[in-house]
Image 1 (spheres, one colour):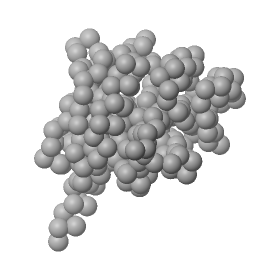
Image 2 (cartoon, rainbow, N blue to C red; image 1 turned 45 degrees about the horizontal axis):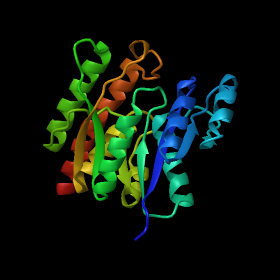
Image 3 (cartoon, rainbow, N blue to C red; image 1 turned 45 degrees about the vertical axis):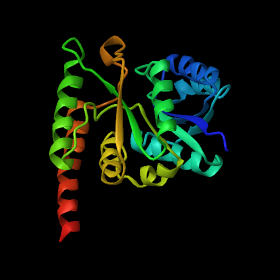
Image 4 (spheres, rainbow, N blue to C red; image 1 turned 180 degrees about the vertical axis):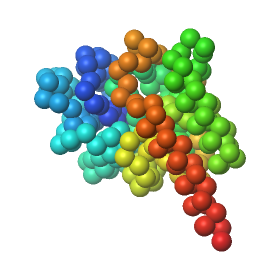
Length: 234
């Protein structure tokens, strides 16, 4: 029986020292690690050079967005790793504790036909833009799919090699890609949730999410998806 490889995929744009800590911790847990530099400025070259001690680092020539970075990493993994393997996507800013990353991976490895997402329990003390944004997308996801998820915006997700093509083919270049990925997976696969700890560093100031512009793009995906599904039924 083949041993299932453990792969961590980390999109990173202008990361700080947290990325090095994350890579080192994942390496100590025997993960193969792929970091995608999403067109960071030259000032961050030293961070990525140090990350290369424990990870494969892919550089994009300019900032393309989280969706493009994730898909570029998935294409690299598909071309360079032999199945079976399970991929866990991890944010570079320290929002995901290593124990949660490992738990999400282990659960996905146990259920290779399903998608596993790490779900935060947002509290009143968490950043208001996170609480409001997640509540809206959760509601729209339920209206669109008829299914309920408690955290549609989590970046901590895991799935096995058989689902890589679907993930690569999901539409979107920035944060809307993650919503489209869930919508695509929902049509054909079971999505499992496990609770994870909510971690916000300096009130989530390191996030590159643009509240108004990116939120508008994300919400539009539900409308587009609804229209697409109606056309398919005709």
